[in-house]
Image (cartoon, rainbow, N blue to C red):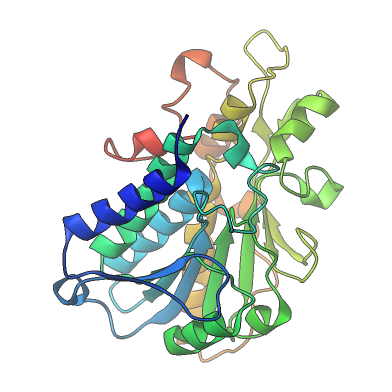
Length: 314
């Protein structure tokens, strides 16, 4: 039987061994989790200007959002500045992140360690600090103030985000949810199980403003329609394959969100975005790709992850 504490210790040891200059500490006032600070040399060359963005996310969905922000930070210097990453700690038995209701329930503890390692390793190697604890604690309020994000992007996170966090960033806090919230489908922790239960033929990814009620904030925009049927028109009950296909638009949507926020700041305007027309933004080739049927042969290779990161697919 797997010892979760051993896996947690292994994760911490691997992150430290990768660079002994990193600091990993418990945060007084948080009921679980840790603060991960990159080594000094890892922070060399970090941007000091641009829209300050905090990424809150985990698992494949969070990694896609995070990598999109990283690519923009690299390709458009001075555009955005990723100030931190907040992510799930699925190995901490004290963590209140609904492990048994969310996607984590499909993974044994060693696989959970792999996903947590993947996103923490990536962020720290880029000089970005990380936090895995209670976001409703006074301790995180202090961390949030130190990081000072102007915008927050949320993608697959197991804690309810309260008004103190929602009200912090001047350019808004946005959640990427892989279901058609406009038609009240798939809110909550099991959007793909909802597809199976409804015998649905398609879905969409929704970008919405975060509110204190889960998946209930004002909708900013939705992806074009995504086909989730098999080539013969039948329905798949493979939740992980459904999930993988549904996440295809996530990166492009986060990219457009970030670019719009950067443009808004550059223009001198304040406040969150009200809408993004993804139907207009995305061209016919991308829409055609979304409408291709599920291909079980491609399972595990659908998402635009690098060769090293493909192991972190759904």
